[in-house]
Amino acid sequence: MTVQAFASVARQVVAIAAIVMGAITSSLSAVHLPPAVSAVMTAGGAAILAIEHYVGDPSTGTPPSTSAPGG
Image 1 (tube, rainbow, N blue to C red):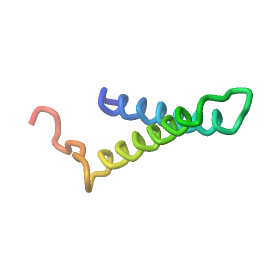
Image 2 (spheres, helix red, strand yellow):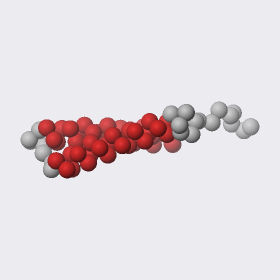
Image 3 (tube, helix red, strand yellow):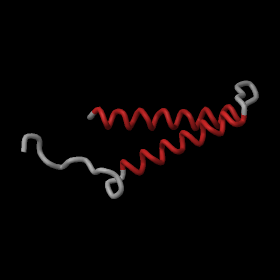
């Protein structure tokens, strides 16, 4: 796994965590953040996932190199 692929997976995990935390903090009173913070977490996570999907799609982003190493 390349560093770029690892970073992509890490960003996706953080994005999903932000969406989940945004949903949890908006629905549970025990763990409650202001509604604006919950909305920003949810929207930010969704935006990161959308960007990752766009750049990871070979038809829209940069496709992985298919050339063999060394030539």
